[in-house]
Length: 303
Ligand code: A3P
Image (cartoon, rainbow, N blue to C red; front, top):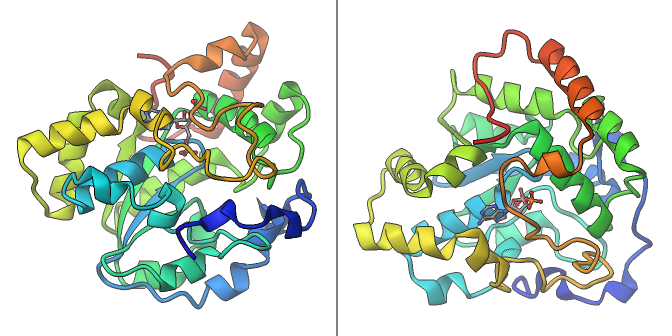
């Protein structure tokens, strides 16, 4: 069944930790790369909504918020299945587990779909049909630290190596899904021609209610004030960390080992300071300034 999702028979799976496979120059998890051709035939429905993010930017948080909005704040309905079964992951593929495309076929409209794909790999239908997009961006320094810890615990990724080498790979776009810099910029540019609500993780932390109201307006929906407050409460880091339908603990340990690093790890702004050395931070900032010149929006690495 779809709802059991990844919880099926991991013993049948091919070995994990395969090297990334480039597709149009974008390094991807091998099984995701293998599904790219088929994915281009995906047909979007007009009332689909896409949650798009670079990994580790608040995808799961936004997914829970969106499902709560769609379910009118009904907690029992949001508890019907793990988040990865409620919000199909478009490009997901892994031996022995239903792929994203299959989960999507079983999901009734209106669908909420998750992707991390850069625009060059996004199925054309999503663009042609002018599917509403909610993009969540998070500052690069917290993303790379979160990503490093995620690589360690989520074994569809190759071994991350040392922090030092992972940081260099991230800066060079040599991690799964490629360049963070390119990703945040191209989805920002898409706003000119496509309905995109571009949100920031840091703004969501600062004032989740304000950001949820932006989402409601973008979707043309409304909810009673108490329901919005309930959504804020239910989607707090603390609540989601203890919610098995949101925290990925239903995935077998062979695939995600929460004893190495929990999926719901810290959920804060500025945790990068606990991992970066001062020298690494300076090196990163200098490279960042070069690669992000001319960018007309900014990120907050602390608030
Ligand atoms: P950290 O590793 O910094 O803790 P994604 O869902 O895109 O993979 O992002 C995961 C990151 O979002 C993790 O960051 C995770 O802890 C954080 N996160 C998940 N739910 C959250 C919430 N409700 N509030 C704040 N951060 C959350």
